Image (tube, rainbow, N blue to C red; front, side, top):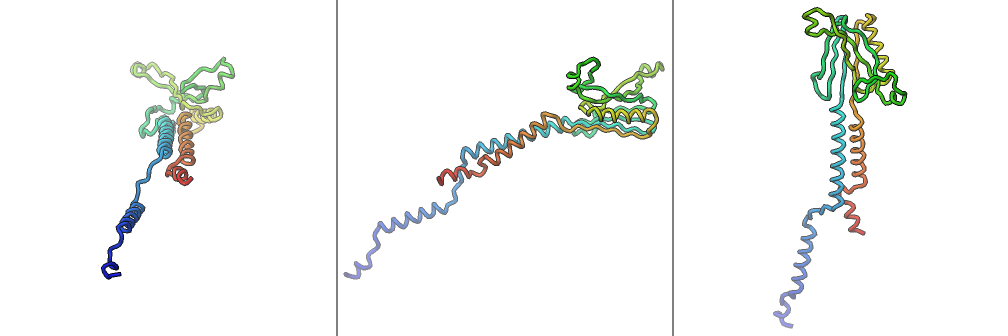
Length: 227
């Protein structure tokens, strides 16, 4: 065999094989954009809707929150009612101590005072417990003509305080009206409502269920490919 024959170039099919393996290696090393599966998209939509329901429930609870205060000094009393996140009171009434008549328990339904005398026990059970503050208020024409005063009342809180608490708070206010106390602080707070609490709980439970059962990271698609 001559020298020219021994130094002949390699066959072409060998070069083609090397270029094909190099291209395959490059494809393996090139980062690929992960594909989002249908289950993964559905899980994120499910999670978003669940968290939205929870946020709406929390917002409903905060917007319906009410705070009622009665602050009495040895000379005067001031009643204030706050709604939601308002820093200024939505209702404010001041009167001197000698104009305070007293307080009495009452029954409410949907935030309104209702008469329960003569009603059946079954009907009374659905009514809430609250209490009224009674005081003497002078009208403008009565002040000018000196015709005396008119008795007015304030529903301390529209939500159900419970029978025992309503009686206890009424007793304290009447003690102050009789002169047995010189200082008085009464407060009622309602932070939650049924719709807000239900929406908040359902939203959080649904979000937790979506994270446990759903496919957030596309793992279920990878498992199906391996099978």
